[in-house]
Length: 288
Image (cartoon, rainbow, N blue to C red):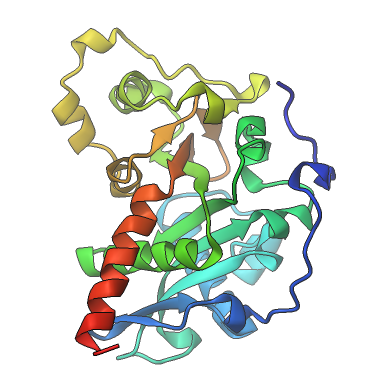
């Protein structure tokens, strides 16, 4: 398989210009107490998400800012202009951009086609995913304000993703998830466990590009304690695994963001099933 090259949109089929606004592509707002989750509907809300990403990735986690990012104090790239931005908003602070406390970037195939590639293609050969017979979506740039790193905010993010998947009939989600630092041996247990127990089936398995490939099998998997290894994984990766997610072959060092990335692939059967049951319960409670 060959890696997808920038500027080649043919992998995605014909771009459909729907003419829908950002709000029309969304699903309204889902609430949990003071918090709500929805798709950003204004440039100011998207800007608030980019600012939050800068604070978390650069100021807190040690990502290396270029001159543009440092001057603007925003984490921004070319994909933000075509993505949908999932937001968690604290209504006790404000209903608009001032209340944004968590975000996730969602890129569907037709959006990626406008650029010619997905973000993950810079690190992985994703041709098996592009050949998947169904709707695919890339997840990325997940971050939560430190004061909101609790079960409620994370559950709302997942609920928002489920609603989006349900609305747009997404069959497969994928993206890059991160482990802290850039020393593979410091996260040898995590990488070895993921490779030994959660490697994706060959038909949907991304593989790190040859010049970026880092071996995930750092030691003999027989030496692992699987339960302890699972428990030490970052919450986001554990969330993917709970939904039946898999990882690709090979890790990638992202020196700019001070992370080691693994490719994650999730078929959405469990996501849509859980959301559909939740939707049925809410409909019954509302007397619909």
